Length: 99
Length: 289
Image (cartoon, rainbow over all chains, first blue to last red; front, side, top):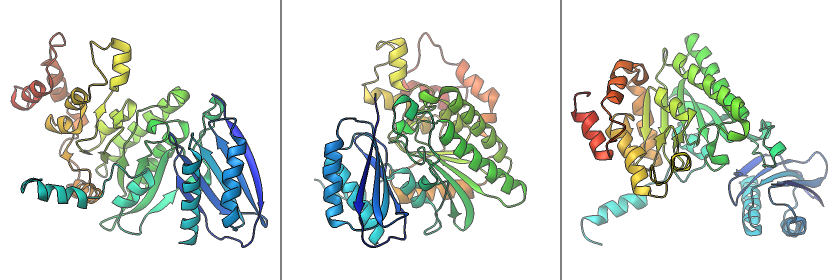
């Protein structure tokens, strides 16, 4: 089994002040740790159990950051989640951040 | 739907499943409202250093949620195992988290500040990838449970669906009081392991009715290896936990009743092992009761 690490970077607007944790590193699922970014950009670090899907990850995160503007550091620990589940977990984290 | 089934159905729909909750939500659901305070949480990133070396993605809290809070206003410590992460297995870090938190609770107890220790057990036992380090941590957990029992009852919950196996089934057995659901399973070796080692003739691990009849929560309760059998309902389990602590320490801890337990084992003929019903009769109504 191999693991892949993927780093992505996005321009960001407003700062965030809270930390949010959702999900679990279980089969077909992932955990998302979202916290304030050290600068005015958004940073994403993905560790995934399934290698070779870098392009798909970029598409999912690109789409997420079309609507999300927070200056956050996001750590994703993935255990084979499908793109739909990834997006749901990201939306869940964003919603928890707003709550 | 007939008239008899309808109220049961409504009750089923009204309940809030505990089994479906993740570890963090389980701890939150049991503690008094708004008292949950996590120790060594995911942002502390105390994770397994060993899993990534073996190509396995590590979870930020290593699958154990520790929380301080209160139960009916009394200070409590909850250690909840996340079954969806690596089968709830106990590695070096997750085991040390549980042992360390229990040791701090023990120190508080020794200084006249009782802390109620609650274990939400959902685990296949030691994490094989971390082998001896996980086993060492489990031994520490056993030792501190026994030390804690001198001060406060130690309460365990096995809700399902993973159950509680291996070294952590010994931790469950060391608890002053154990609460189970019908969905729970409790045993040393899991059915898959037994089938793999001894063959399908010995035990068919795909026969769910058989498995639950032998090691399921209802059977474990019926033969006196668990104290309370509750429905899969967060409120019911939270109430059972409070009742268990309110009862105080048992007269004699179950694991200390060595003669009684040895007699129980002695009346079983391994050549003709009893089935589930026969075991209930043997242990509840037989000479060793």
